[in-house]
Length: 191
Image 1 (cartoon, one colour):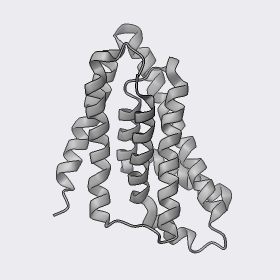
Image 2 (cartoon, one colour):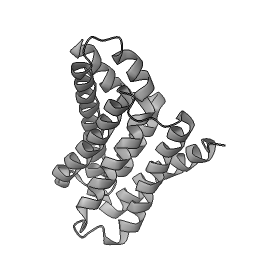
Image 3 (cartoon, helix red, strand yellow):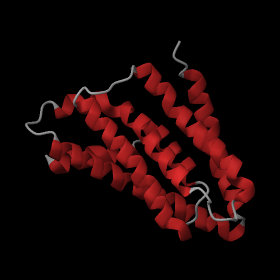
Image 4 (cartoon, helix red, strand yellow):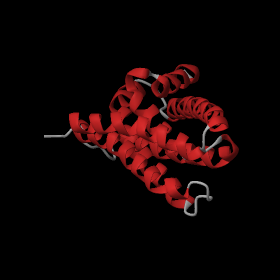
């Protein structure tokens, strides 16, 4: 059972049908290079913690939000992260002076993204005798998948930065995440 839920978490984050999670990770990592991998690891882990808490709360029916609002809020988190990146571009060569705010933002946005998968996961977990182990396995798979995606982003970014500046990379990756996020946001307005 552990292995199947681990694989489910891994597939959840690496599935191109749900590329909104990948867009968020790209936006989250856009202003970082491979040299700052420790900071990115903390950001991604903060996102996973938020995601995990929401999944647990939703599984126990402690918290829920209508699906239409969740589907709207997910691209909103991507767009807000992109806006933060654009605001930070002029100061990109300096170290991030407020990393705690970025970590808190990743944690909070993880809460929102966790709601996007909670109904499906809840139905799977309710079939299990114990939900702790499957929930842990799912979240570990999710974290492994996110780290794999982030590693790819950071490697591609390092290659790009070899020829261009980190600011150019951050602008390109941020713009590449912002445009589809805005499109999804418009399509998903909960009316």
